[in-house]
Image (cartoon, rainbow, N blue to C red; front, side, top):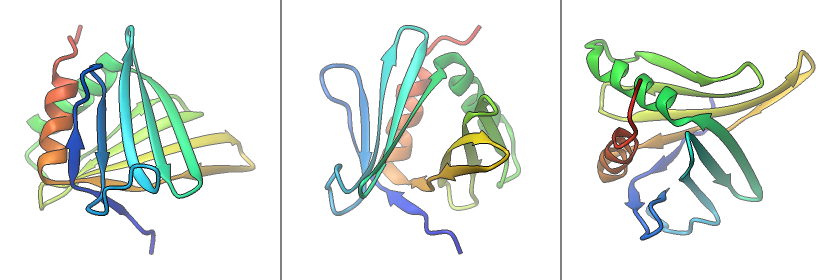
Length: 135
C-alpha cells in the first residue's frame, strides 16, 4: 500500500505563498509549498531527502478544483499538467484532497509522491488557489 503523507497545518507567509505541513511541523521533513510566478504556480513537495517541484498553470489548477467542487461524487479526480509533469487531485469521502505529483521521464519510469491535505490546510489551499482568475 502506498504511504500517504497527511498535511493538516497551513501558513500563508507575507510574500503571498502557501505552505502546508504535518502535525510534526517540520517543513523540511514533509510538506508542500506553493508560490505564484506570473500565470504559473511553482509547487514544491518535500518528503525526507526528496523534493519534487512542478510548475503548473495557475488557472488550470483553479479550474480543476472548481470542477471537483461541482462534482457530487467523492473519489472524483482531475489531472493538471502535462504527460511529463502532472498533479493528480482526488477528493475523498472524508473531505480530504489527495495530491499526487508525478514526474515521468519516458516509458522507462516515473517518480511520484503522495500527500493528503486535510482540515484547515485544505481550506487555506482552496482559498489561496481560488484567488486565481480562471478564463
